[in-house]
Length: 181
Image: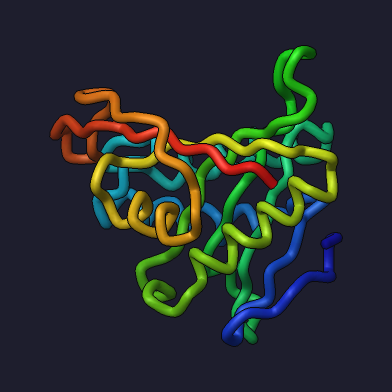
C-alpha cells in the first residue's frame, strides 16, 4: 500500500501514509482523543488535550517520513479517518526481522464493523512487504483488543499484572502477543 492507494474493507479504505498532512494529523488526533475518552489504555491519561494529541501525531509523522514507522489509516467514503495502526520498524540491529505493532485505534463510531480486523490484516501484510517475519504487540489483559488478537490467531506470550493504567487512573494488566508473518 502507498499513500493514496490501499485496500478496501466494508466501506473503509485502508491506506499507508508516506507523509502525514496537517488535516490527517487533526483527524488522527480525533481518533486518539475518542479512544482515550472511551477508556482505552493506549499510553495517555484523561483528559487528553488536543495539543498533546496533535503533538503525538506530529512525532509519529516524523517517524513515518524517516522510514522508522509504517502508518496505516482507515478512511470512510468521505475520507474521514476512523481507525489507524502503526508498525515500528526502528528496532535494534539484531532484530531486523521483526516489528512492533502499536496504537491500533478505532474510533467508537466505527467499531463492531470489522475495521480492527481489517487494520490488523493490513499491518501484517505491510510487515511482510518490508521483510518482517515476526510481529509483537501488547494489549490490556482481557480487553476487547486482546480478544480480537486472539481471534485473529496471535499467540499469547503472557500477562504482566499492574503494568499500566487506564485513562481514569485504574491499574490494568498487559498481555503480550506475537505473530509470525
